[in-house]
Amino acid sequence: MNELHVLTTGEAARYCGVNFRTVIRWIERGQLKAYKLPGRGDHRICVEDFVGFLRDNAMPVPAELAAASRKVLIMAQSQELIAAGRQALQQGGCEVDVAGNSFVAGTMLAAAKPALLVIDVSLEHNNAFGIIDHLRSRNEFANVRVLVVTEASESDSQRWLDAGADAVIQGPGDRAELVAKAKLLLEM
Amino acid sequence: MNELHVLTTGEAARYCGVNFRTVIRWIERGQLKAYKLPGRGDHRICVEDFVGFLRDNAMPVPAELAAASRKVLIMAQSQELIAAGRQALQQGGCEVDVAGNSFVAGTMLAAAKPALLVIDVSLEHNNAFGIIDHLRSRNEFANVRVLVVTEASESDSQRWLDAGADAVIQGPGDRAELVAKAKLLLEM
DNA sequence: ATTAAACCTGTCTTACCTGTCAACAATTCA
DNA sequence: TGAATTGTTGACAGGTAAGACAGGTTTAAT
Image 1 (tube, chains in turn orange, brown, purple, cyan):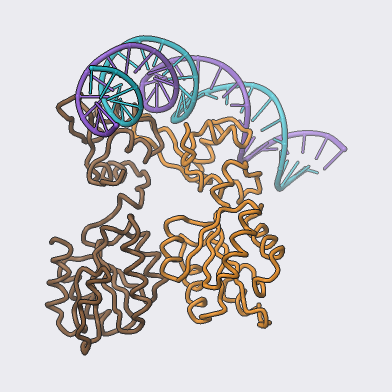
Image 2: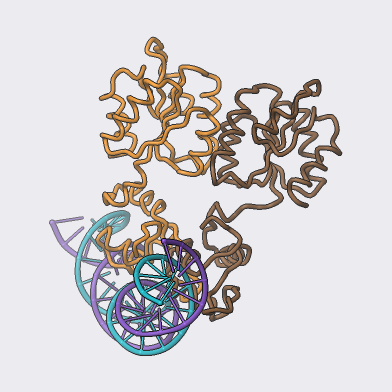
């Protein structure tokens, strides 16, 4: 199996050091999501679901599988933030996409399924509130972490946290802080 | 893998995380419908049949294949246009989604794969230009038809057609025209 | 602390589905 | 024409499901 999109029960079992019989039981109990093949009913587990299962149960996530969940989408117009964020996050081991406007951000969020959205709210506050609100109201985006980048001068981070953001940093200035918070949110 | 009308066994195999040999066996067993080419007997699977097969077996359907040819996405803020468009298009046999802003429109476009985007450009021209431009520059959106709804007073439809729109109507007033153009673009 | 119950996990077996490999055919391209 | 690519076919090895059973761990009660 070269394609890492799905796993068999045996592969999943090896990843977490248990017998494949146990993985089947997790699936039967509904703890781990999987689908069945028509033939004998073999199970296939989407990597995404498997990683979510591991996280939910505080189990270690294998590096090869974690790669898929290190995707970061930066939504910003400021070239400064884009350049700084892209470089810092890539050096930090993340896969980085950039969207210059909210439409493109929407398509990339739905298509590439990043684990973290870094959003520059310095331009359109209302727009950003709408976006976060939409993310938080949709199941399919429930797992997307949101890191808000505000104006350096602004002080009321709490507003954004209340709106549903997972973390807030002020201005793109401190790259170390950006990477640190991103890693924290990505559980790296 | 660009032409999405038919799949080879290998492509179908990759989509459901299985070996191509297994797909051939599903076909031989009659579980998956396919036809053979005269030469070597290559199998070709109609996307429609494949998606039906996936649904029948409770297997996940890839977003790229789920494209429904009668799905319409309306991007507008004017309640008048939304109400008129939704009602008219639904009566015309379309499945209608509505997005109130460009971010939501982006997520729905990537996730629900509508065949037609009705976009109200009366508010933000530049934004709409950017959206159409982005759609036209991306392969995955090449098949999305764009129907632009302009201010009733505006007369230069040509600008939008040049930008990549497939049709333009002026104002939400004429429901018959909206439905007619939508059906034309959907080849209904 | 000890005991018992409940539960989870690993092992074993049978059946058969699935992956791998090799050889070959059709198609494409230079 | 000949190489490269892609798909088929057949044989075989390997993997997985399902049920039953035994051992281990956790939980709760004594």
